Image 1 (cartoon, helix red, strand yellow):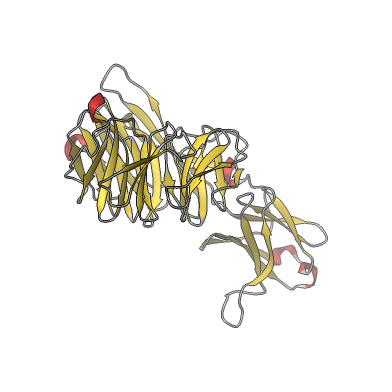
Image 2 (cartoon, rainbow, N blue to C red):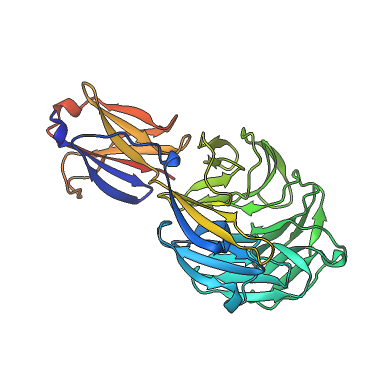
Length: 400
């Protein structure tokens, strides 16, 4: 077959770009190829990024203030909030859950922030000398947990609007690390082998059956996950009964997220992913760029980092956003038949489809060449029928 008649259509999940080539060139794996975007100079330092409601949101701090940015594609960013004029404090956590972006911070006035679109934010203040370590929303209320500087007030606080807070709720002070909502309950971890569980967000009960000692908890696809140690996560479907699961990952995971059908987490140096929240694959051989969390929109991964550039206070930073190349890629290699070089997420399902001619239609639909669990990236697949075809178009799809 004439090589000029081969075409590639490359897509991740349902997002695609059309590529055509008559002289294929080598392409690095997507997770070895990151675009760096400096978004602050001698100002705020980014440490958190999430994806939700069709938008990336990143957050960080400088001095005792907060900064919030958003992006539609992970490449182009806009500053939405700077705390010295909008009341945003230091950012210690950023999560997307129940259709909401939520942040917590402290300690110079323990601050909270909520947004449904990642652009417009409402900020609140909790009357406690505390680091607010996590926030969750469910059952019509917000709940935050604190590991207070004031030792008598390490506790829970609640709000119906995310800005006006009541509490503390418990008489006993504890060092709370994080909280999540799912399966009809709030679950908070203390890092000492216990969980506190509440069905309404006001009365919490302590349970010793917790199998972990981690500092974060997430609710992802009907599963509570609390990374506990190197190679171990604690798992529960209801928040009350827990098991220990071995991950196969050498490093302890950071907060687990479930985005576009994939469980993802960062370790100190690497990206790890899972199809079920139990069995994990390390996706990057070399160390990730950045020092912050990682997010995924189905097309590319995004993470953040900062570099401290001044001392003493006010502390200031240079900040960076790192975006991977489009995740799923096909290239053409040449033997007796077409060799397709597929790059994507190892251990996750992919499909390669073909089309005799464009455009695709009801009478000319994309046809499956092969379905596979990607064993390595890149991976070569042959199309034995390509020599007899006048022309053929291909696309690669990452399946949920």
